[in-house]
Image (tube, helix red, strand yellow):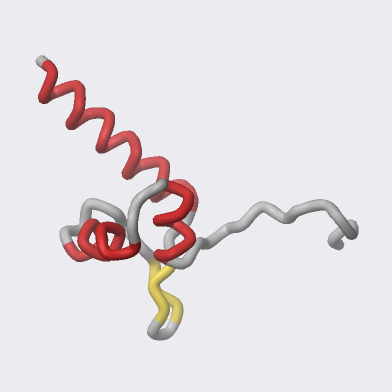
Length: 70
């Protein structure tokens, strides 16, 4: 049960919300989804992004950054 005034942790983000959380633009998030660098789940026709997929995407970016620096 929800307590008024206490935010509920979001389990799924729309691509736009994921883009906002990552600090990137809407078109870039859809490009990363298209390239399968950012995974999504489907519910009906909607594409949604679980928080752990956002974390996995950030980890991928970190790995790529480290590889480029080496």
